Length: 159
Ligand SMILES: [Cu+2]
Image (tube, rainbow, N blue to C red; front, side, top):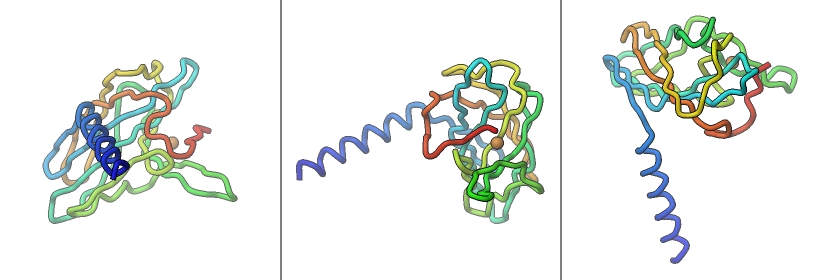
């Protein structure tokens, strides 16, 4: 009984904390929830960004590409297992955002990759990113820079 009560308090606190720093964007039928990136070391020239993209339309959409002024190049990456090693590579043809469904960009899976960062990503910064959708068009979002261990589940080894 006591444990249940404690669990309730903890999950309520987690909800409030999440709501407090969540930020969401909308473009047509597409919603983008809490786009974020991990802070980077000064010598680090690459970084990844993650978010949840939902589609309230009756037909599917596609995330075709992304652009940002913070890096020389922005790519959409997938991670695959090759000979027991996780490797990432650019996706071809974009990523599906199913009708009434969602696309999750998260560590160890699909992500937006910044190649040739012009400056280190600093904790708390809000950085510009434009997402290009096949049907919804361009969505301008701000990526929030989170701590290095944020959203951690398995390493994301950047080459
Ligand atoms: Cu990558």
